[in-house]
Amino acid sequence: MSTYRTRWSGTLPGGRERRRVDRRTVVEHWCERELRKRGEAVDLSTRDDAEVLALLMEHTTGENGYLWKAGVDRWYHERLPEGAFRQLRLIASPAGTGWRAVAADGSLLTAADNLADGTVTEETTALADVEHVRRLADDLPAAGVEDLVLVTRQSPAPPRIVDGNHRALAVALHLVETGEYVPTSAYVGVVRSRPLADLLDKVRWYAGRVLRDLR
Image 1 (cartoon, rainbow, N blue to C red):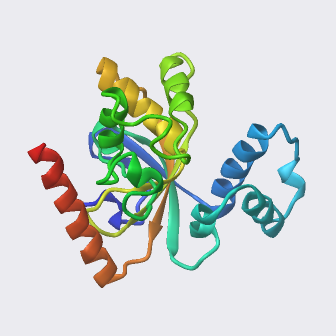
Image 2 (image 1 turned 135 degrees about the vertical axis):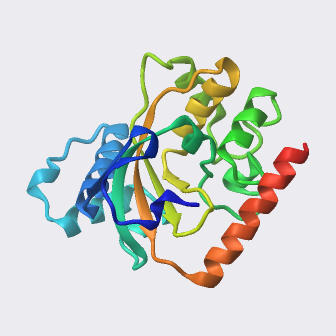
């Protein structure tokens, strides 16, 4: 059962820490990363919420929709245990395109397996920078990893990565190749429940899990 059903903050079973954060915190985190990648220096503390969101939208595409469309009920920040990290899913893409070209079932661990065995190359998809992922993985664990941004529905299906697919895949690749999990934290947005969509999401997740186990 998903641990994201509750509005509770504090210590979860197993010592897992979670705290509530507001949307502004998530937007600033993501925006700062995008600006830094482009060598731009902007003092976000002098900008209001709308201005910071507008900056983020200038530097990202549809994946930022969870930060401005109705749907995300609340945000948390937490350190992901290895078990939770292993279940993460890549950002949603149509079958055979984008990140689904890297892992047909959308699983982060499947993507890492495919990258490790050479199934995925630079020619697989322009969206996934394979060499960049390998460089990030080579720098672990010394370099650490910046926080991911995830979204999850109130269902058993694991969260999807909306920001940080490359760095999450680097952590997963390091895990597959060395057996070592580099501790990773994330901002997790909980999407309001939509019963039919949640049921379909659950069925797809279980089907993908069965297919992965059969390989």
